[in-house]
Length: 103
Image 1: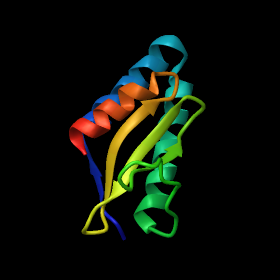
Image 2 (image 1 turned 90 degrees about the horizontal axis):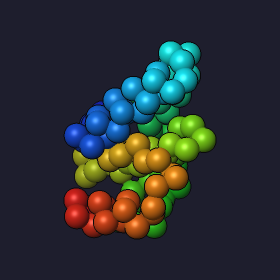
Image 3 (image 1 turned 90 degrees about the vertical axis):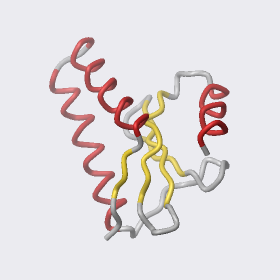
């Protein structure tokens, strides 16, 4: 099984999304987000599925909910490194700037 490694931005994004869902919607929606993240984590841990690349340095993406995509990569030890939970409504140039500065 692969190990899941969370980057600091991924942790911050995850926490922000939960807080946002609770403040604007309900705990039920926040729990749905958490459940979907857990479902995807299990898929990534098993390692039998790799989601499509986003055309930047072997970084892959998977849709968690309508607006949020999880960006990750498989590192040299075959571990899964979570990079960001990216809100697709944001300017994509902002994401590329972030990736270029970190990866």
